[in-house]
Amino acid sequence: MNRFKKIVMSIPNRRFEGFLRACILLPFVFLSAIVTSNAQTESKLIREGNRQYKDKKYDDAEVSYRKSLNLDKNSVPGSYNLGNAYYKLNKYEDAQKQYSGLAENKSLSNEAKAKVFHNLGNSFLKEKKYDESIEAYKNSLILNPGDNDTRYNLAYAKAMLQQQQQQNKNNKDQKNKDQQNKDQKNKDQQNKDQQNKDQKNKDQQNKDQQNKDQQNKEQQNKDRQKDQGISKEDAEKILQALNNDEKKTQKKLSKKDAEKISIDKQW
Image (cartoon, rainbow, N blue to C red):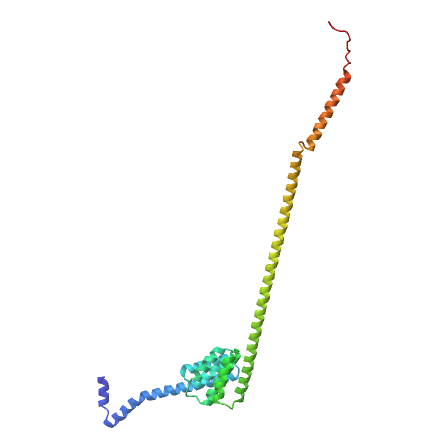
């Protein structure tokens, strides 16, 4: 600091005043140079991005526009063109964020903002978000009523919305019909299963009844035979035994001489 004072004191008054002014203005000169350099670099990047976009090198264009926004985040051309690059790359949600941010920029002219809303509507249209696209096209036409392209896109979006609603209705009706058919099929299957179950039970009952009738019949036969005293088999055995005894008796009698009967009286 003392050294600086010595240098200042050694300068004549007139020269000191010029030196002082230079010291004051020097930071602003540097700042202006930096801003000018950034502006030139930003513009260069946007021009480079535009050339890449024209050559359909949308990935490269996206990078260039991003770099330009890193230097000036409020750059309208950089933001708008980046949204267009997103659109060409099918990054519709990113494009919508870019356009929506620009649509809130109050410094934009009505004509520029109308283009932003038009492109926003296109990005919604690509995703079949017809309600949102219709709203964006309407906002564009409010700012620029003479834009026939926007009016055509609005009519197209409305027609597609109507078709989508009709398709949704048809799908819903078909879904309900399919559900009804499914419910009826399940009901028919349940009825069939119940009928099979009932028939199976009926067959089992008939079989059980037949077995019971057979058992009763056999028991009745046994009871009848018991009431008759002897069974047929026992009766045949007894008859066979009698026949055998009779044969033995006849054989025995044929071997024995007949006894003589005395007529004399025994005293």
